[in-house]
Amino acid sequence: MMQRSVTLPDENATTALGQCINAARPRFGSVFLHGDLGAGKTTLVRGVLMAAGHEGPVRSPTYTLVEPYTLNGRSVFHLDLYRLADPEELEFIGLRELLDAGLLFVEWPEQGAGVLPEPGLSIALAGDGLSRQAAIAWDEKQWPALADMLESFS
Ligand SMILES: Nc1ncnc2c1ncn2[C@@H]1O[C@H](COP(=O)(O)OP(=O)(O)O)[C@@H](O)[C@H]1O
Ligand SMILES: [Mg+2]
View: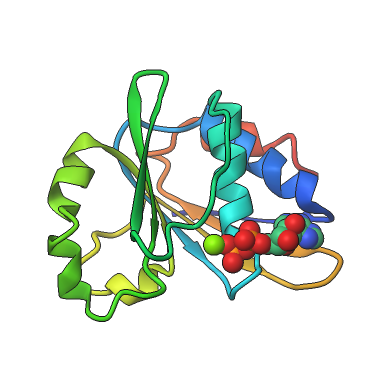
């Protein structure tokens, strides 16, 4: 696993990190997004989706659990497991099919422990008020372009 920590002074920086992730995005796999409510997980996913050309709102799928997107012909799924009662429920939203179809961004992955596979990329967001810290860990085999993309963050 590669690791890198970056400071995100404002919301635009969180969005810019999303752009880097989009540019390095593989077709399949999963991304775990850790952090408390308001840490910026959805903002980061919004940055990824907007960089890929998505227009329109991006909200946490808190009640529907999963929101599908098609970006440049590739499937991306945004999951928010905050309200998942039991990891086994992931079967009912067709987790296996989602993993076969595209890339998953998962908020509150702790709620799917034991059922979700290991992520190729995980980002832990912390801090509140004026800025955030992002602790980024990734598998170079699954995300070979990410290290170069993150160079633009000092
Ligand atoms: N780097 C940052 N510095 C300061 N505020 C940020 C930063 N990134 C995002 N925010 C703000 O923090 C809030 C994060 O909300 P959201 O992305 O919905 O969080 P989560 O999905 O983790 O609950 C938003 O109001 C956003 O504008
Ligand atoms: Mg959210």
